[in-house]
Image (cartoon, rainbow, N blue to C red; front, side, top):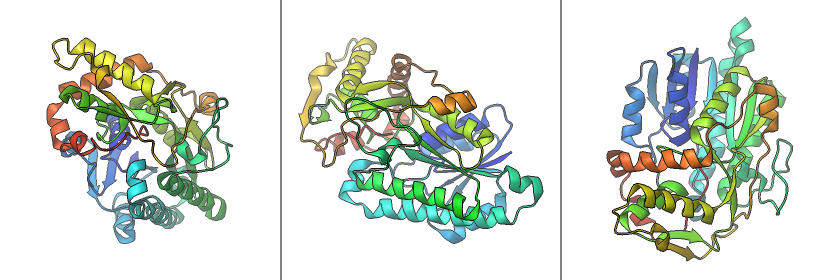
Length: 353
């Protein structure tokens, strides 16, 4: 099966590509513009895999996207290309509008024209999976969980851009019949995450003895999902979900940002007994809260469990241990990102993955 993964050189996208390539049953085409967050070593690792091809293109370039459909004739599309860092969306929202909204529109139109030209079984089996975030639903109170029927109430430019993209994807299914499936995930973490995000940023800061900046009181609650579990879910959705379906994908693991930082510090204390910065929790520094910062997210993934049999398998303890160990063991990959941790010393952290 030929599967096009937009944003395939990114954090979640690369995990999905590796998952699809395991077993050698699929040909995977990554569409990625290779922007600031695309690590060349991630790209090299994918290109070394049999069955992977990279197409360097901007998702908002209609001619390039149409040409990729015509050249590779995919059976499935998993759409992950997005600007995703909330702080960046506050400072410069224009790029989020261009990539997340215009880019999704461009992809949907290219997919629609391609799909309408297919015949018989190819047309019936085609699927486009649009991957989104739980941030589109805004903030929860002390109780409850988001599900597939939750009301949209985005509070950041990033969340608003993803909400708009979700609505476009659903509209292209309702209006044109394009076989779209929409997923909304909770906070991802794991290997190969660009170190603007909470967990890799804190790991690299702590190893270097830099402060660990936490927004406000640090009691914002997030549902944490190991990226390989998310990749498994997206593959199941791409291969088995019915057109028009929607799925919430979460880790069923609610923790505060402060709890996560302390857990990372404890893991580093264990793995680096000779570190001059032990105990690493002494580096925690609270900074002014971010505008519009949602207080709590939690997800109900029971539908995808009932319908597709997916459940998260990696515990937070195991996932964090694997993640911290990966960053400690992969200095060249971290160096290829540039000194992001140092550049972000004046900022807080973005927990979304």
